[in-house]
Length: 373
Image (cartoon, rainbow, N blue to C red):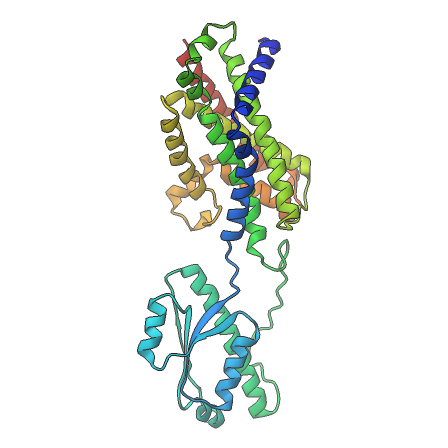
């Protein structure tokens, strides 16, 4: 194997990459745009819950309950429907997230010491959001209930509640960005490296230079290394860029080791570059390669645990996730960013990435060698 020939192949690839003026901004701007887009859009934090309110009591107690809802800043009284039909229309039209109906005898029941019902209607079309809104609502009602009991009895009663004191580690404010942005960094690196590598061989064939490369003294392994090194360098540079952007723009703490993150990225790129190279060898046009790439990216994304917990998936699907390199890289990057752990804890994920990377890349090399013969 001649490193001189590999060096010249790498040089040729960089010249081709940067010759096109339209592709230069994409190499820099595309990862940042994706990080910004996903970082702000993929967010489960609820800041504004629109409430359609029907207050049939119009008493001091009902106003205190309404104040409890609006005091925290999460609930906003967006509509005051006159009847149940109007409230239903607001929920059906997506103009309200929550419907609250306070009955006429609300105050009288409280003063008598009876249970006072309050009707809560939640839009459950987005189940995870609905569950969070309902949890917030239960907290407000519980706080109001305690205040009313204290006012009526004259002292605070716990009525048998457990005093749970919860301390959240690694993400004290439970900001969803701290969970999603490290995952977005991993996804952006996978997308760019996989997409660029998948068209590497096809581009040579469509330009008519593939035959010229075959008849050169380049050995197949030298051609593969020369093709993948430029994309490895670009992917690592993009990883550094989006990581710095995540730290300084989104203020995501990097609690762990940067070298450990760099090592994990290199192992992850073994799988993505190998998979991209494999797609490039089985495709005949750039359009076919890109369509195949996006077809492959979707299941990789869905089965990675990026959004949906793997434990909630069917058992058969959970077994399939063990073949997904993004699953292991997400555990590593979130562990390094948020928990500050390293190889001592994450070695199973590093080992899995190594095995998968070697297997995928070796398979791609074997397929490529057959196409050259």
